[in-house]
Image (cartoon, rainbow, N blue to C red):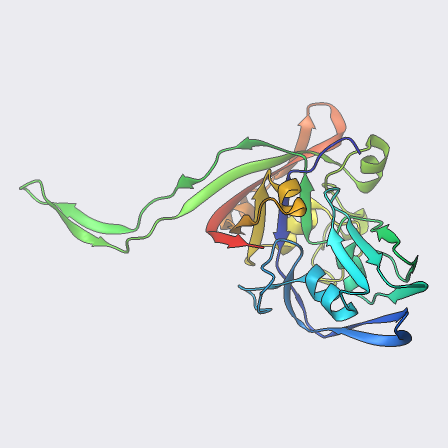
Amino acid sequence: MSESLGYLLAQTYQIASSATCTTTDDRGGPTDRVVAAGYYRTFLAPSTGAGTATDPAELLLAIETALGASKWRVRLQSSGLVRISYLGTGTGTLTIPSPLAALLGHTSPVVLNANASLDGTYLPTHCVFAAACDPDGGWLDGPARFAGAALPTGAVYGWSDGRTMLRRQAAFTALPKTWAFRTSLGASGTPAFPAMTRALSPITSEPAQAAPWSALDTHATALGVQCAITWGDLEALVGGTATTYDLVYLAPEHATAGARLSLWRAGYDARRTWSFEVLFAGEATL
């Protein structure tokens, strides 16, 4: 695809019960490989994450570690797809259970010859990828929390908590309307809409919703959970030349404003703009 992805908003999700992958490879098998229950985020998460809601583990690393990194590799590509590679000899077979298969954008089983790879059928769920972000207002300071008054002498007396709030309004633009449009347009970003059968209830089956994922899914499921975002640096993060990203939460107003998904260009149905507001919660490192 000709569109280079620069932006990614990834949300935290909980895998409530341990998930068991099964491998058959040059070590033998079939062998169960367990991914622990906990909180995860895809790619934009610390490699040392504790698996909690505010310190999630990184899903791809967790799966790769469970499978055995000397035999299987699970990595995000600059295309946004997750690539599974078999590094052993002979033929490797990997069975991926729900919800991991959907979270990876893969179908199961994965059967690979030695040193072969397979990219996901879909982009990973719980992520919104975009090639463009316009407008982007940058980080702006919010109102301070201060109670006080000006004295007749001109002095100001009062109380402040000494903190600031940073808010950013932005829009991922030129998202394909649906996965079908993504395919026909040769587009690269996450679709705006999922299958319409779940458009009114995106939270159903969380976090095991079937791919393809959409901006509308994130719009409904990411409220109140820690998210991570990279502003144009996705290729550098994937390539290892950058390591930092922002931690954010969707602002409460995001839920109540409505009309977050709009036509990218008037009269053109194939692409959409997803507008959002986020609050800065810190900076983190892969």
